[in-house]
Length: 294
Image (cartoon, rainbow, N blue to C red; front, side, top):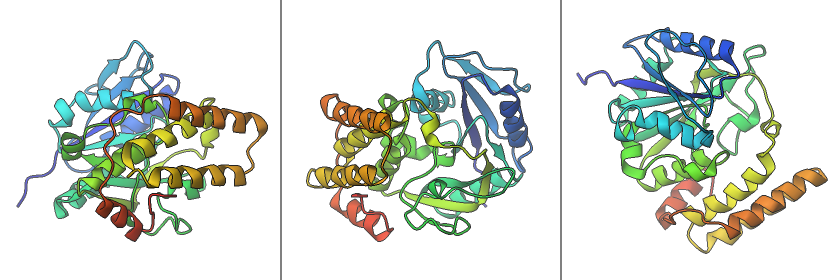
């Protein structure tokens, strides 16, 4: 019998949700099976009081979501190699069940090509899952588990071999689309991604646009994502489709102005190293229901 996979967890915090953070850490401590070692990264802020045994790192400045999570990964050794699997959990989330870590161990042990698991996010009061939290185009049934092409940043598990092979999250993105960037690189390397409806993180229903930088970052990073990862012929197609979708949603004047500012910034600034995915990966994405043009 294979040894039990070692599971760790990374949580980043701005230090402004101490009660929610403590509840999350308590839910991690209650997981069945071997203890899940946790690292909490204060992203430009002190870390509120945490239970004994939880490691903390306090960064002097806010490195953004991917930057903070990368620091957490490295706390488990280069590329997180001291553990087999890392959970990434929002600091205002809560693991709904005590068997989530054990389900992760079982899933990764059963399929050596499974690289990433995306959890289901549910509102703690209503139990409902927002459509945007189901990482596929056919999102009407959040209770249906499936193979997918991306994952949710604050509710997931990643096999650390993925980081060793394709690298970490893109620091420069700061916020938005960093998960899809990692997902595309992982898929291009042959890894698989699953959405599991039975692995649940409770999280209050929120709108992503609550972040002041939302519209600019979403547009800038969408351009960077395409420039970094797509074969050249698909870059204008992908970005053209997203431009039309954005206009169809009829954002407010200030939101649209911020979006176009970010779109321009995405073209005028460095996107980092370009590693276009193979055409066979494009076909894999298409067969999974999400061709990389939408």
